Length: 284
Image 1 (spheres, rainbow, N blue to C red):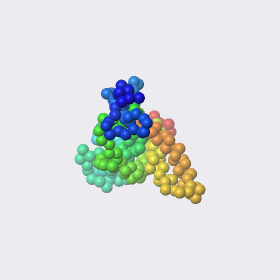
Image 2 (tube, helix red, strand yellow; image 1 turned 90 degrees about the vertical axis):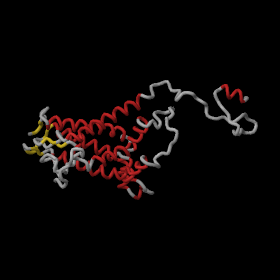
Image 3 (cartoon, rainbow, N blue to C red; image 1 turned 180 degrees about the vertical axis):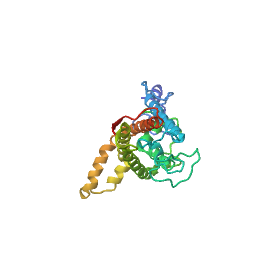
């Protein structure tokens, strides 16, 4: 096969290319004038991911700064977007841990202590990295589709080097999930005394999936079973690691489910606290 034959097939050779003895010129990558040869709608998954993440970010941002509809005093429902509420700016009853912080200006969310850690936990999550790397940064947007970036430095420089702090955000997320659980338990005792309403079920479902998402985290898997040389010598940690690994398989599903449960929980508390709808009482 001659050099001309390679050129006709779209292959190019460079003067410095070496060929094995007895063979033709060394082959290099095929020169393409298109970004991809894929004919399917490869752009649909990245687009849907972008729309889903953007919808949650916009909703959560607006609700975090509204400062209304986050506490239902009658049923003791507190939205997770405002937990914990530690400022004197919080409405009476919504501060389950007191108000050690004074009045806050309107441009600071009332849950400013927890929201940055939750945001950091989500942004550095292994699944969310995959999601926004492909859908927002196009690195790459799909298999077989070249990314637009001319240079790749990975997670070795700012801002992506912050991804290595994921395990520390995990510890904070566990604490905040405990607080959300505490809020859900307190909601069983409203002004009418101990009772159960639809809001209690909504809060519990949200907390349940928050725990599933948090405990299915790759960092949790490492904490429970990482750096063990012999599982046989650590049967308890091995058992915990096994259960966490089962959750880890569904980490992507829990990531999306919790975005939905957070929005639905906040929306329900908002509508009930403003009197738009009435909480459906099951007991008392």
